[in-house]
Image (cartoon, rainbow, N blue to C red; front, side):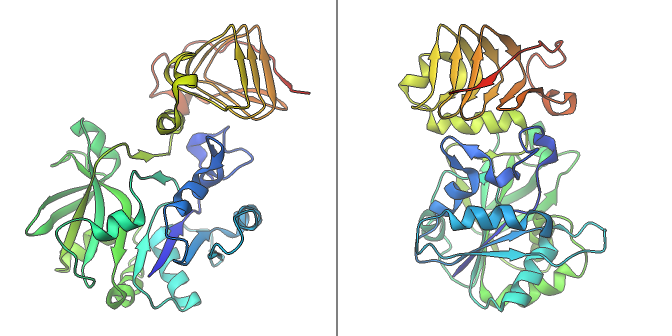
Length: 334
């Protein structure tokens, strides 16, 4: 088996967090999101990460920092003509250029799943190696399903219908972006990619429409599709411990090497070596080694170079969005 991880986008919706760091390489706690995804793959299974030419150097540097012996290849996508290419095209080109002939497991580079690869491949009723299998999560709110690929399924027939980002979802079950494709279908994937399918969900829909049996691995626990500032902070919930929980409300993650004193935090992330003193922060991220003192701030990113407000389009889905920005100051810890 070979694991393919599309990780091409920089993450425009997450700016300014992604101004200098591609979305999959953002720190989630003390390690990049992509590192945590790769860690869920058995050490002996080869992994290929698909990236755009503009971001190749950053991903190569990330790969070089991984433990010695970890089998990770960086595949740099073919230069485009300026038109949108999408992950399906990138997957097909990677298969063709790299000569991958194994069964494939595709995992998105910005999706934090509450299971390991061994769980996924061993779970569900369908264990046959020649069938497509996808991981699906049941949302509590049907309206939220509009942002994802929506599927109807049952244990016997598998996926009965699949629709990408429907205006009116017919099911609360959504595609997490993780799927298994047996080697016999790699040629089919390459053929379907010629249709210009914009999203991986469109590939799944095409396979279902073509009569392929697609079984479902139901995901239990917290699944985080990290595409917005809110989802980035929420993903830290799985990392919270009693130390962090005592110092704030909502999701608050504080690095063990950070210092927070006389402060109230709500939905915040405080990275390593940072210091927050006598401050009240709401929906803020404090980058490594930054000092924040005597501040009241909402929707701010504190960096070594200064602090930045969240763009209105990014924070529009957050409670309290639209409040006037508060001028703050920060400095690098010494």
